[in-house]
Length: 560
Image 1 (tube, helix red, strand yellow):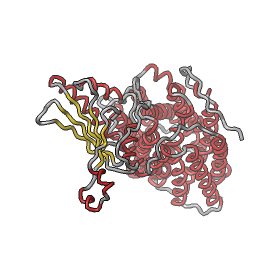
Image 2: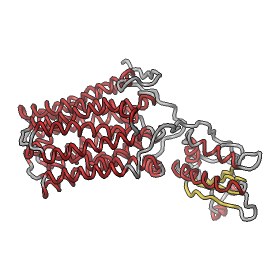
Image 3: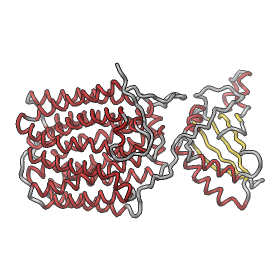
């Protein structure tokens, strides 16, 4: 079996199509587009089948929620697995699971035993597979293309999905109208086979793992801590959640818009989805030029404005062609916003935590979508489709206005590559990797005139330490010698201490350098590494082990 090479040509991207120069990205992208094509046919079948067997608007809208809710529920776990295990195997497992779920859905539909809640169950299971596949796939893009091609690769992924969306819904509507939803579900099952084949052939080169993988619960906690202590990522999460909550109204209510508002059948629903997809393709193609002309915040504001205008048009237009024209702008706004959020997350997180950061982004964006699908369904049920769409447009305009107070970060100048300078220090006391807790103190001598600068730098140092896993961080000042300041923090084990220092990025190193320059004296700040011990254990300790309670782990010359 021949492995697909993962070569990475150097040089800046010439266009949004530049990532297709890389064979593995090209192969996975084409296979994913085929899978997305089947997924869109399945979505049309599920949505129209639900509109046929359930008359309540909130029940129809639950189809969209059943696909997005698993991403909110399981994405963090999926991201932790993708950061600690083989991403290719995770994608293979997720794709195989979705294949089995799609076959089962086709079977129960073909047998005539499907009910609204059974349909929701199977779409939920397919959504679970998508939730576990997403972080692994998105984090793998950085392994398939160089960093300079990453924004274009993300836009191409959106383009591939929306090329399928532009054609798949119309074909899906025709299939549902001609032969029924069961055949659409069967075609979706077949669409997974190509991607499974490509992933089975791929043999990525993984960097050597010098440390054991974090346990799942610890890895999930590390991801939450990193994002919560990263101001850039927090803003992206908030803005994406608001956008997803509002923008999903168009997708969740689209079957009802087709059925009741423009009075067309499943083919008309497919045409609306197709127009939405064509607009998304146009948005993906234009994203490169827009990023060169506008800031990241400017692109998202344009996306919110396009989407809000299209949503208002859909609220009042009784004509299919006019609504389709509006959905062109909605699709463009959708892909511009989500690809910008996705790229911002990928370029704001180092590789060791990128899948978890992406999973938390997905949880925020798709959590907003799941909640929005349910909320807009309720509003449409009790107040009508126009009121629901107008309210969603108002939220989109609110998100646009929020950008003046919480703008998305600019990504130029971020240095997230690992520093790779840390070497495990030699210590006098033998301990195991799981031994702990470990206490680290770093002693600085600071001049009085440098105190303001020192405290400012230490505030950033505290954020970085806690973000990367340090606990109980404190800053102490000597009462007898006021020039002496001591930074103190804990790690649960010696292995956690090693892992903490290996997470230092090139950008973080500037803080350490500033502190060394502020330190008074020829020697570097003195570092003490100590292990906590309980005194009540001394009574049963062996003589050879007593030194464990007396000898600190000290090394004034190594990295902290």
